[in-house]
Length: 219
Ligand code: PRP
Ligand code: URA
Image (cartoon, rainbow, N blue to C red; front, top):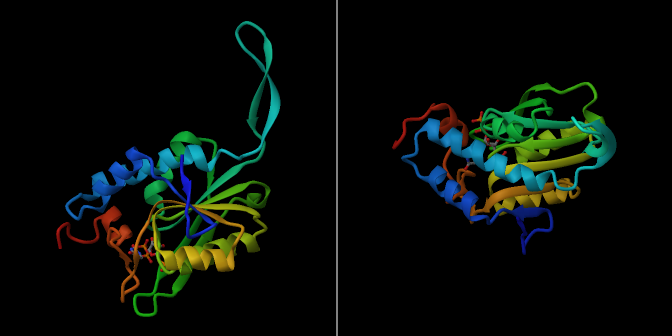
């Protein structure tokens, strides 16, 4: 069960031992891309159980092999929205639990000099506004990328938006709260701070590079 952060009303931190165990291995600079991807997907899967707790259900009739009975099913579609690239690393883990979920992609990269988000791609289901949206990105640093993605979803008519990330910086959580107070952020850790390059400390480095092996392990 995640705990509400004492510092931020819009943040839930997952202090579950299994999630913390996996996060610690993911942080380790020696963890290679294959293990890193597996861990991020496993953590995302574990988080999904709680993230979906308040989804609406409706009663439906179902024929068991023995009789007709009433069951419950999710009443609205779920759209996962990974922010490219690194968000892809947690999406399969969520889809293991939600095979029916659709996936909309938003491409945003952070400008290395200004740290501002640069939007380059989006593809969403045509009826995305009718259901729940879960923005997925392992890193919430300045919050620029997350806020831009959430803004894009809101402009597309989405109202029920949550975010899953692995590691959040206080600056990013605050920014999401200021710009989108209705959006709950679920994280495995609230880290200490951003450094001068807007990297999260202690963090885990550049998530996209670690997921896709575009930086040497141990460099
Ligand atoms: C990383 C990360 C987030 C963003 C967080 O992506 O995956 O999207 O930075 O930083 P912010 O909160 O300050 O916006 P990056 O721009 O490195 O792109 P990538 O996933 O393609 O590597
Ligand atoms: N993006 C990352 O991948 N890592 C950080 O620490 C900050 C932004």
